[in-house]
Amino acid sequence: MSRVLMCPPDYYGIEYEINAWMSRSRQSDRHLAQGQWRTLKSLIEMTGATVELLDPVPGLPDLVFTANAALIFGKRAIMARFRPPQRQPETPHAATWFRTHGFQVEEIPGDFSFEGAGDALFCGETLFAGYRMRSDANGHQELGRMLGCEVLPLELVNPHFYHLDTCFCPLAPGQALYYPPAFDDYGLRVLEAHIPDLIEVSSVEAAHFACNAVVLGKTVITHIGCDQLHAELLQRGYEPRSTPLDEFIKAGGSAKCLTLLLD
Ligand code: ARG
Image (tube, rainbow, N blue to C red; front, side):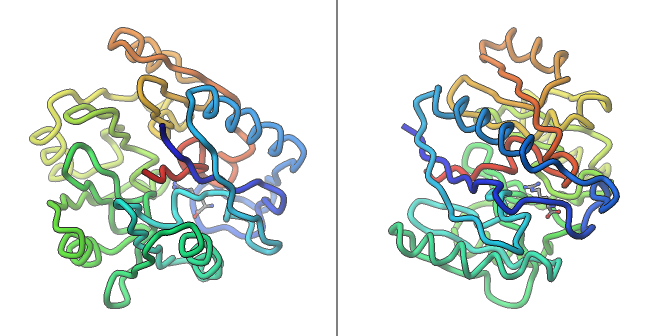
């Protein structure tokens, strides 16, 4: 049974602009956001997964995006080192949670930026790692040495797809969703060479964060408006679910960003 870390959106809001989706003139409605977050949590629990909660903190509106807190590898939590100063105070808070919940808290040596499971995703045994916008390529090499695994760095070239989990989503070993215009030619070749079943997401659905899916066994949860993808998933034996998450898309995040798989 899976365990997932989430953080209630009690202090969530658009208080600064650190990616192409955020605009302080387009505020989120906290009440709506809380309802959307609770529905996502129930959908996750309906798969049999357990949701663990990180305490929300006033002044840390993006703490809800727990995917960025760390990369989990067994009982090791490799902590984020956020590039935007606004998110840096999240790390000590999350580190306390990991320590008190039996994780070994670690850092990537050096001063490389690294934004956790937002930019580092396992597909099978290989770690696919997004860089340029928020995480550094050299840090990913350090990460590979720390974990003793193969790392394939992918440059992210489109500011709207600034974390790897906005444009790439492993479903199973050898199978993933991706949005090709988010990558350069080299990145596309790497993906094609390593993942035999790549499911392409359209521009319209990529803008609905189709790639930012929570995958729990055969259940795949996304924001609404990803019908073409859901049809493809049904054909492959998955059970797609959609739930509105537009309050979080205002901050540049959707279902997957709001979760961190703990095992
Ligand atoms: N506003 C947040 C940021 O820009 C959104 C993070 C979304 N998280 C993710 N894993 N893609 O950092």
